[in-house]
Image (tube, rainbow, N blue to C red; front, side):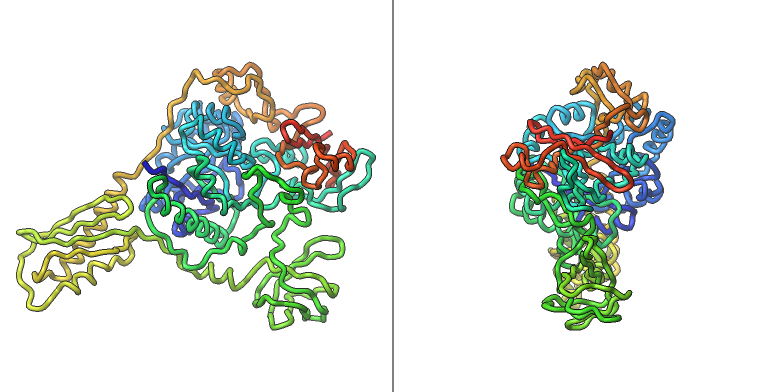
Length: 610
């Protein structure tokens, strides 16, 4: 049986969610009123319920992110919210806090968030035993590591394929909490990794450019590795970006929809779509046009060349080079060597003499020059980048995405009237409606007119691809055809609703042994129910999350597979490593100090605070 494949898109609100589904998403993930890992992307239960009803017409799913840690005083609030979401029609919750498993809640399906930090097969197997029906794997895993996990679990595996990257393993970053009092595990990340740093060697010498963004990773792009990920066992392909605008979500979703459809069409016995409908986004997607810090596939193919993972010059989207400044005049900038057509409203940027990336909006563009919205003092020879293409953004904004479910129709006579059969092409499901009326022979041929009327589906979600008409020369009033068509639309809706696959929470194996008997603050235990679950499954020591009780002394605030030494070409396992004397220290703004420790046998870097 073909394995259902899911394209999962982000949504900051229900409008973006609908755009994502129209552009081809099989599922969307969205925040509710609280406890989502993006505090700025909250939505009411009522709005989410309306989204669910709309999405289910396509068998598309709605997942709600409840993926922060929960304090004791909030447990009852979360319990009530989960019940409300279940009865609103939500298909699953994406959760981090294991205390949720001990709440008195309906049997809603639970997915283990990437915040659960699933790095290996043992952790994945345990979470499956706890009753999670889908596992979001760590972004850092290679295809080989994904295959190892796939071999030991039966539930679908989900992985990020596009968008921003956290430098630390998700769920194991305490930097924002320790340094800024804002917990990443509570949806309030201060983005410590995007700040500029100086790198000091063991003698206190500055060995990296002042102000370099040493921990700022490029954005993820695995669009060319989808086939390999499918073979490794991935069933859900997730796009990051619950704070992104509609244009970003439309473009990225449409791009991955097209790529996945090609693979599924070439392998119909192995893979299938997990939702219904064919999407037309109304534009040609282009991943280079949407916000990105340049791209990487991270460690997916188990390779990491120096300089390939970080975006050290800037944490912003600098765009693509378009021209050099020939001369900056008052109110106008003359350009040299431009081969790219610029537009009124474009966003251009450049690196100033201090290395900071600055930008400006173009009021008017002409061949060989632009007029900035504000005066700019830019030295001749400076390279300009375009990071906002106004014409492209207008194309996406004005597009009218459409998603229709292809059907075929068969009109046939009965002894007492007509029957209309409708078949959903993707599933083979057929519904039949009939209507009595007095049969009579037509004076003129009616077949073409009946076909035209049967092809009209207006504001419904259906598109007729083929009509088989065996009525012959009988006269059928247009009103009868319209009535049959409306009845078929209703019947198809009921058929889809009745047969739509609904997942419920899986049973917990109470005898499953926890992978580690000793839990530290890295395990994010923030409430009594999470502590209870851990001890019931064999934990002997359970420390509080750092948000509840901060440990004394040196604290590891980031654990990363990204290695600063390797990125700089100074890996300790190579001769070049000796050229950079340790220990290494990062100095950031406002007195931030991070010490780098390197676990070479595990190929990990840890950043600690004094």
